[in-house]
Image (cartoon, rainbow, N blue to C red; front, side, top):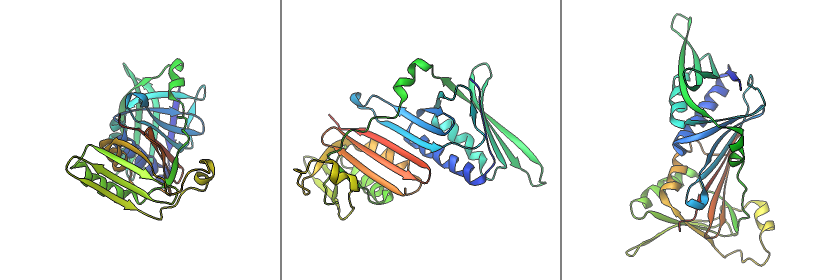
Length: 272
């Protein structure tokens, strides 16, 4: 399998860097799926065992070619993020699959010097090429039918609240209804703290898909590990153009974010 890519557009390069930084905050290791039209960062822990799942998708960069159309690479997210930190104000970025005693994703960054000449900085990121027989475990997650879907408040506001709640409890209850109301709640033997959000709105399809018998006031709730929610919120570098929370009562919460040409799905299972 051969793969190579070259980015010469500064905006595209900075965009790719921001996405890589976000992924590094969300997952220690991830799978990078490369296809002719899309790049995906994938985290596929078994939700049934309490792990989170992630599917991040961005439109493909120009100049990418991959034989056999697809390749899946496992890598340490921080290694890619660290390599791209030197790419600010770069003239061009090249990424290719190499073998230097072990499989690598080689990142070559062309920088401009003061004298207007260029120099190239190269990073070799160790990777594991995932065999085709395991690809079936790395497909886009199936989104379960939600009891309630609701738009999220500003993520920075959520993050600030959850950070304070983390000092009191390890678990958090997210509850929402079809009247655009969302609550973040922690309960201990000594204290109960709830933050209320109103008039957030529900996606148009949410009211149509759920049973007509559901009372719009009725809350759907899920109890989750507060550290996993905080990790998700800490990974968001900019407020997305769309942010939806889908709750399957007592089972899972699914966050669906969209920012320009990047979509992110993040699943946190209920705490058992």
